[in-house]
Length: 275
Image 1 (cartoon, rainbow, N blue to C red):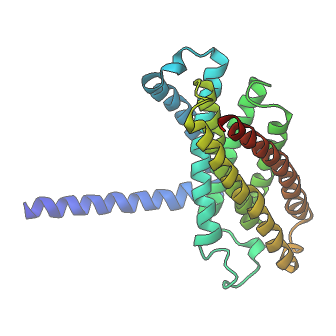
Image 2 (cartoon, one colour):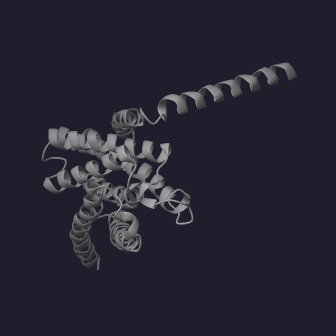
Image 3 (cartoon, rainbow, N blue to C red):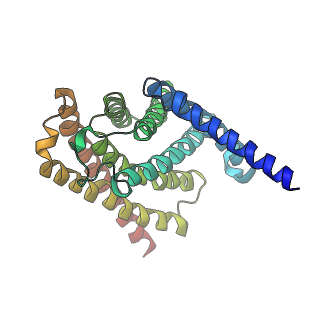
């Protein structure tokens, strides 16, 4: 028994060393990170898309009776929900939990990056490529012009931060706004399943209001404050990087404000009906 336990422990350690070697030499090697991360993101989207179909067939009776276009959107929203959860966790960690972008660390915060932070952005790039492709393919069923603009801006910003390593902190700050995606998707699911008059629909609207307020309004205010207080470091970015940092967040902030106004209007309308 002791010999078996020893052999097992040695085998596990051997596999761990092999996994670490493959991770460092291939998956997280600087020269291949853009390729491996983007491919990982696209493959993960495909897997989640198919998994959403299998789960929905078994657990959601309304799914099978939906028209083909709505089933496609159902699966697409499952894909976007998983991505939003993933990137929110990663972004919150790097912005608030990690020392990578801390002011206590030496060097300009606008140029700091790591293999993990770069790889994580690449996975998100893979998602936006997959989702944008679906939006174009089924246009305008999965979203109109505002979705195309949002995804293109996100894709350009993410790609720049991933490929150059510049401005990753601000990219992750903006990505925290993906926190709102599960609530938006849940609202669509409830509506599509015929539960628009349910209590869950009302609760969802209230939760969306607060999450949107924090993640897409207050967080963007903090973003601009951080930008202002670190302007001496931001101005060291490449010209294109500075354009992205100053232009893209402002465009997204305006879009967020417009969508937030619609959320407030919809919530007040729903609450008025309940009363």
